[in-house]
Length: 234
Image (cartoon, rainbow, N blue to C red; front, side, top):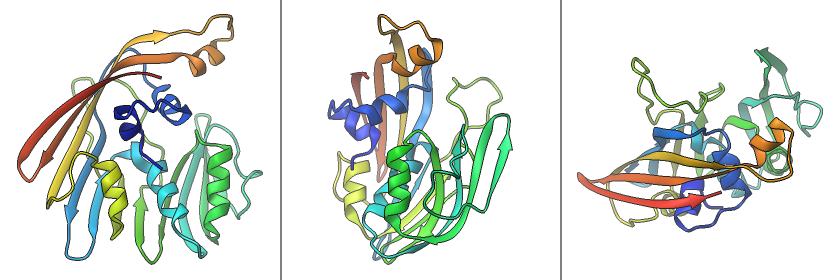
């Protein structure tokens, strides 16, 4: 599985990419999809902003076969409890957003099945396997609004992964192979919102409208800065 930014640079505009862009209005959104990565003795330490949450949860679970102890919350606008094939401890609700609290031992395929059925939910789940130790903050990520004066700068500390699996590094840091320390940030520029014809329902219009714009990627690797950008319509 490729992460959204990698797909955009490869021009692979699938439903995953579209769903990730729906939350953006027209404008410039700085400090998105943040990554901090360090090479340690026998593994990688990767820290990211919330946008990588679902990607990391799914990628790590897809490579795990045994049951895992999972804690955290699943954030959605609906009650996901009836659809989950594993115990939900309780439901927390605030302003129409429901957080299903998870604290259980479960087979990875049951969580992946839920993610396949409800990909737009946010899976803020933490767990540890033989090759992955993932910690995700148990809360809903902030909404995608352009920054204003006084806003606290976003940092790459929402998700933390320790792993010896180099394939994740190759996906997230697709321009480079060998490094000791790397930092990545993106600006998402939405220049145009393309509305589909023949749809009058506002909610459906919003979900199916395509975004046209540019991703500007800034990578700092061992002190050297590399900038790249690519256009998208998805």
